[in-house]
Image 1 (spheres, rainbow, N blue to C red):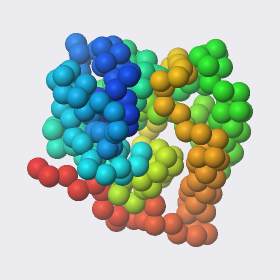
Image 2 (cartoon, helix red, strand yellow):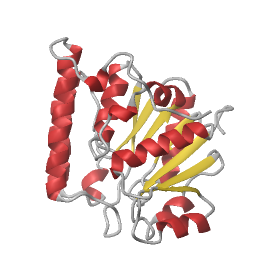
Image 3 (cartoon, rainbow, N blue to C red):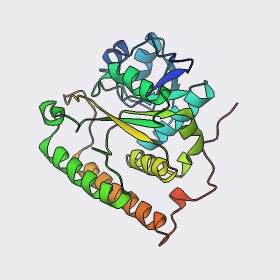
Length: 255
């Protein structure tokens, strides 16, 4: 716990057996109260490794996609009493030890959400990020900041922390089940006026780290641009978008 708040780490997993133990081994359990792994119908031994490590594990019978996995992550974390939820990929691409810093930024009361940015500092390319992904990241972020009136260093990190208040407020079931979920969720948080902070994070690209291919990256990029434009039009009152509809229901959570 941090200042009496329960800290939960959620691991959205798909074929993560080779990297899960390394990721789990660096989670700061001095402040983390609960670790939850949601397995999206992996074809490897992810569930067996998670159970051996004593992680609370939920397995999807069929693959629901990256966004569908996260919806289960956040719903389960809230049901288990989380006050702060840190979403960490179990592929060891991000630094688990930063959970403490990210959770602290929320517990301080200064931020409602925190993104671990690979772009702040000079670590992205040094950590092995492919040049085309780096260029695309910078280009998309430039356009998104202009369309959304923000000043983030990147929108595409898979390492994020959220307060319970945010997760209880956002209509996440309206977001995609695919990779663009991250950007749609972030846009919803911006629309509702939540305070978003960033922290610098090293990244590691290696054979066992998950990464979408060039085709899926292009589809993702187009989805990101659509989300940003929809946000701009909705905020300007030019075209309402159901992603940001007033009165939309948040995730359904069992007491």
